[in-house]
Amino acid sequence: MRIKVDAEKCEGHSRCYSLAPELVDVDDLGNAFELNDGEVPPELEDRARLIVDNCPEFAILITEE
Amino acid sequence: MTDTRNPVEDLAGDYDIFDPGYVTDPVPAWAELRGRCPIAHTERWGGSWLPTRYDDVQALAKMVPELSSANPGPIVVDVPEELRRPEREGYNGASPISADPPEQTWTRRALLPHFTPRAIAPQREFTKVLCNELIDGLIENGGCDGAVDYAQQIPPRVIAHKLGVSGDMVDDFIEWVRGVLELGLTRPELRVKYGDIIRDFFAAEVIDRRQNPRDDLITALCQTEVDGELLPDEVVIGMCNLQLVAGIDTTWSSIGSALWHFSTHEDDRRRMADADDDLWDTAIEELLRFYSPVTMARTVMEPVEIGGVCLGVGDKVLMNFPGANHDPEVFDYPDTVILDRQRNRHIAFGAGIHRCAGSNLARMEMEVSLRTWFERIPEFTLTDPGAVTWAGGQVRGPRTLPLAFG
Image 1 (cartoon, rainbow over the protein chains, first blue to last red):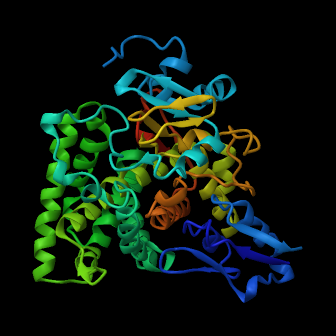
Image 2: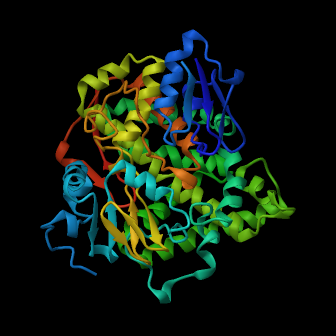
Image 3: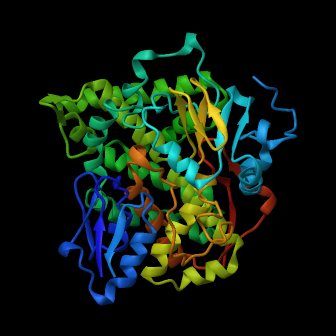
């Protein structure tokens, strides 16, 4: 699985970071970016779906299942 | 102004956000409106529009510059011309919440680095110690007012600590903020009076920090440069004003609502008494969704057609984030608290460029205050449902909450 944060949509809520700091980090404004080129280890796939489903800006996408 | 003693006969054209029934439980009104008039209108309290669908609130939150935030405080009655302080409004008022781009953009960039998850981390230990001290002081009594003795005591002290002002000022901060956001909503002269008190207080603090820099947020803002120039005093004072007005009764309302929920929903209380980290993660977000405290407002700058209505220039739109978070099109079983809810794109902190700057701090305060409470007081109940009082309007939450322990 692979995820991608859409920087145009992200407004820095940082909810993804609070739920899955293994998958995303945030910059000085709270805006998120994916770690490890967005690659999601198998044991964190549920977490990845959780951050997708909790983003209020619809800014995180699963680009590869 | 409409006589508010008139009972509401038709929500779609005459809702009243100060109606006691609406303040206590607005969920039925939102459900009715979503079904037959998703963007309602009222002439009460200066006139406003009330969207109730998630998609409409999301769309409105992103309408910049069609909708302006430059006068965001008064979700209801405007301040009369003779009481206005134009030099203390707009981006001087409480940036970035009171600004539109371009000023909103640079003031937000100046403030946000102080509220990232890492930047607020030092407040976590302070908050935990504080919560334990508060509980030390009340646990032997066998009960307390969960709103006044606990929830209300936490955010003012955390904000004071972050700003770098004396914790002894907490009672004053509470009075000032309630003066602006509660009493002042329907009484503009009080809003102006307490707004002046807050600004005068921070004006003195800013003068002090320019001369005696310290390791605190006021100093950091005083030293912040934008395009090679220090932030003007008026902007720093406005930002401090924002910390107080937006950072105190919002979060105490969320903590109080959560205590109300667990004191009246025994199954959920028992579940949280044994909760693991994963359940706390989702539970905090679910409580934020269900009991979203904050309704903001925008002013229409260009005509907008949305949801079957046309918003005219000068109209007020209430940013009904709490109502959006109960939309069944987006949330399964929206009117039930589901502590392990997985799909939860709630907008309790708003959406778009004005999303709450302090959201990470608020989330931490909620988590630490509730976890500490549950560690010390896992069993508690509401003693007298009739004694519970709620404040509403711009910020909704319990103001009296009699609890018994054990």
